[in-house]
Length: 115
Image (cartoon, rainbow, N blue to C red; front, side, top):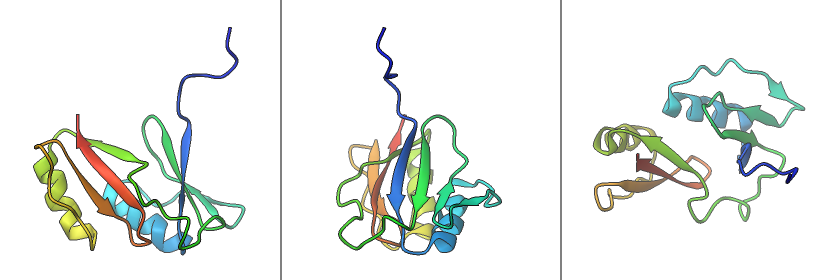
């Protein structure tokens, strides 16, 4: 039996200001921002399935995601697109009625995809 699970546990996202990033991500995801900050540089977002960890210790301008390494799910791509237009400075157009990219305040590129 393989000791490594074929499962993603967490994805680290480099952020410049942990408190601002926590508040922005929690607002975007509609989850409470009341979790504990760990070791003065980590915040685990409350999520279903694979998790996201915001990490200010690994942040540098060169470390931000230039490709969408994180895909968030939605059941309504158009409503999600409108929601992100209110939350992000950079939101791309919807592609093939299925997905779009956007950037967080630090410039990390993420994707939302209709499941």
